[in-house]
Length: 371
Ligand code: NDP
Ligand code: MG
Image 1 (cartoon, rainbow, N blue to C red):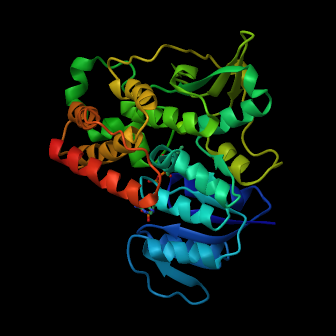
Image 2 (image 1 turned 135 degrees about the horizontal axis):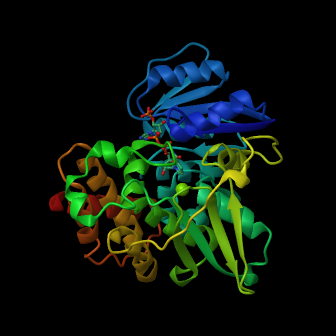
């Protein structure tokens, strides 16, 4: 029985993971759980899964009989240190998830990583911490999970490029002249995936794909010239690799996070998801429109610039998405805030958590002043 801790258990990824553990009879015991503010659900889940400890990161939590309870991020670190576990699923959304990733790796736990912000903001530093503590980072993001599986079957020297698929989001075919009128509700309505709010807005601007390009570069060691993005509205092909002999290998499946989550948590599980009936499918592919979706192109520039541009991109995007969701800025302004924050130079290489925090705060301040 593998012992797992699920951070961000009340969200979209956390709920999908728990639903799979609940219904698929996996060899997993849920020993610890965290949420940010949803205390009633956190306690209910801990009771259902007979967990040992819980942490509420966003506020204080009253003690609960039969459970060790922790509050805030200091409490989260204490909880991780107190538990005997094999793997942590980090399904926290946003930059705050980085602290949790670093804490989990420092305990020597393997990290099933949905929180792509950890990789984007800490870059190689995250992998150094993992190496130092002999822990593995296993991607949960569907594209990266697919890439990891595809790369397993190939000698790295044979692989010319990674091809990341993108649905194109709800505005794939919308003329740019209508972008100013986009509402929060429209931006949240993702055509193929059902996800948390932040990642849904990011899918509408293609900032999510930008984060994923950066994530893939760090996870698999491919530079900007060896990563491609292709728009694939049906979200059935989760990603592909192109080999030097001219072939392309793809991983296909229904748009369902169950498989990537469980593949990261345990090996050899069977009959996890509804089989794909590919005979009833019609798959299409198109080039991304970098003009209408400039944040995607920015990701490739960020990879070429190096330094801490990726961290600044993430911080500016979090600030701008938050303001957009509060209806304080328009969709075009959201894009502009991110682009203009990146007009600054972000040359400093990242080598410690305190430095990451300082740079993140600086980028947030600049982005906020641009709102
Ligand atoms: P949700 O918004 O649905 O859930 C977020 C979870 O994290 C909730 O449990 C929430 O707790 C908790 N949380 C929110 N803010 C904080 C914080 N500041 N500190 C600690 N915990 C916090 O997000 P998703 O599940 O959609 O996404 C989670 C991560 O996975 C993101 O990084 C996303 O990019 C990535 N991802 C998601 C996919 C998806 O299909 N949803 C696909 C691929 C990657 P509470 O409920 O109490 O607020
Ligand atoms: Mg993804």
